Length: 60
Image 1 (tube, rainbow, N blue to C red):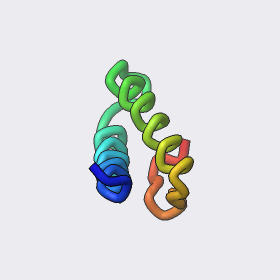
Image 2: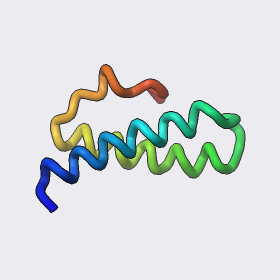
Image 3: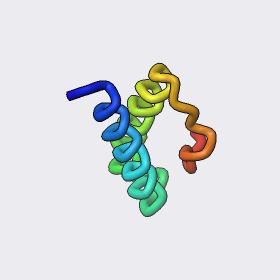
Image 4: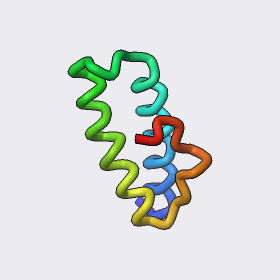
């Protein structure tokens, strides 16, 4: 898999996890688990030079 394909998948997953996070309670166990993945994806995308300003709706 090329780096470009990996970044595309990561951006798509970042978008998807945010949708899921917005549809559940912040105090729930599910939200906390999703937040871990959200944080990991945010680090990966930021380190890859992706500007998250426009696509980060959670902003935590």
